[in-house]
Length: 473
Image (cartoon, rainbow, N blue to C red; front, side, top):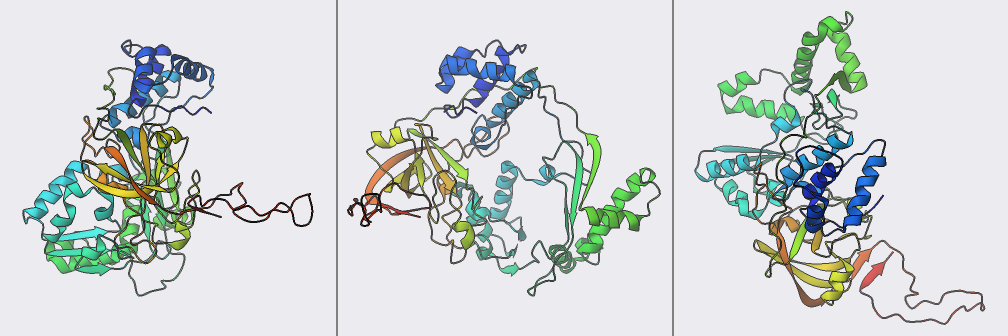
């Protein structure tokens, strides 16, 4: 209910100070005064948060976004979950997945990506299979992935579109769409109890494509006999059926005499299998990680830089769809372009207004974008949506806007080593240029048109407003 402009990176200190004020043991060093200094919030604001948590029937603090991706992101998440535990909303771990490893166990760490790049450059990787992702766009150039891919003799992309990464492949294999294919998944993080989902085709294939599983199985057969023996299934449906038969065999005693065929039909009909098997509550009030904020911006780069996931374009994967480009940002109304959000006070200090183009520069590079002012941005923060700035991604996405991930510094979380993409500091430099903003928002100004009113049929006389640099819808 309350918007509080925290100083970036201070969320963990504030969470532990709130937990201390609620009576947690072992957090005496985290006082509200320390939190006030770190966050630039007044003590009365912090006290009001304590009162709100005490009065709430089901208090909950959410961790994520930029707060989880600074140099102290892991410690910040731990601190926020400690606050939840103290406030009466203990964190529950995900249970073991229904089948195989959960999504989190299959996700590479940033250190593993770096090791893979090193192996590519050393010639230890002879073939690379890229499935439905665009890491050339979504990872910082400092990783050196583009140069590493050039070192691999055989690059195969499984993709429905030509994008920055698939354009580098020797072969592009197009799979069925999700509505034409078989698949299953174990969501993680999940809903607190064990689940697995399964999907089956609902429409016939429209184009000359193949199921994703069939592509992988056939590639394995053509590599060598050893790989082929590890992929004994006829097709992806056969693989999924065998995979779910493992679930059935492990639980047959509790399935009231259902045969596997009956179980399989029930799973396909429901699309999900769930079990009342919850994970343990995590005890987070003991030793805590230190969530002290990282280094503050300096003279050369005086602003925090926060790339954020676009509401319409997400991480950029939807930028090639024109109807997604036309979905306005809910706060600014912007469509079809990139922009940089500044607090109005920051814009006044720099003598900038909406539509002025500035250069946003970090130690990793520089990009240009027009200014859009927003009171929801902290005065020391520069925020930009991710999603635009594609070099190769179809007629609607290519050469439109800029990619803020291209200027992210190579910094790491000091506890878990993840890429700290919200830890970059930047400088703003006015270019003297202006850009007409395309915004789906109303305006109280007549824009040179006569407005009908009670004074007569002609209404008020036409009035010409100066060009405000925007196109309004």
